[in-house]
Length: 298
Image 1 (cartoon, rainbow, N blue to C red):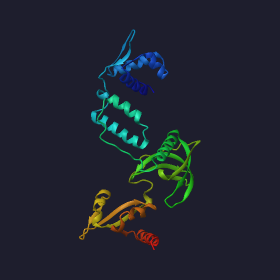
Image 2: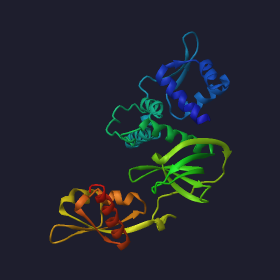
Image 3: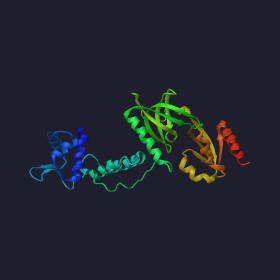
């Protein structure tokens, strides 16, 4: 609490130049003696903060002071501000205030080299509400209820212990302990509807990191072997690491993907430029799905 208070005192002084100890004491609901002690600590730490007695006096900081002489290097400051901009893209403007404060403290105006927006092109307001509701439940360790639509078009009511919000493969997920399945699960945020934050608390602690080579969901992945035509060369370089080129210009791809109904949609995104070679059950499933699709055009 003291560190947070002193951090904000610096920001207030940079913003207002001079403020009285009484004003700071009232703002932070502490005694004047506590404010004087904070000032002494800041001064001994090398922050150019000083006090002036009499009319028009108060606590001040040197006009040209920025936080570039303390704690962080120039590269670290830029990384902090840029990272916060990325977090702001997920948290939908909730970090604007903090960004302004840190920019003032760092004296930085050159952190505008990157712009990140993880929201979708549609229904971003609903995404924002879902994200913030889940964030609130995670931080307060409250159990939530919601309706979830699976990749198999099944709608189920879930009661979960929300543990962490995740971003993986261009999608946002909730990592939680599902009381219905009695196991840990990933829930895609855009499939979560009708969230209710209950008054029931949980104590479970999330294991980190969630995404790792030997994670607990490895049995839900499948190794695909694909043949892609040379027309897909631009996507091959963007999306795959393991590939070989055939004499006819086509590519043989071997890659690992999580099992799910979405897999057909991904394969179909290559159109006639893709052939599934292995495994055989996926190849046959794609053939059957293509037959069903053709029936729509008879």
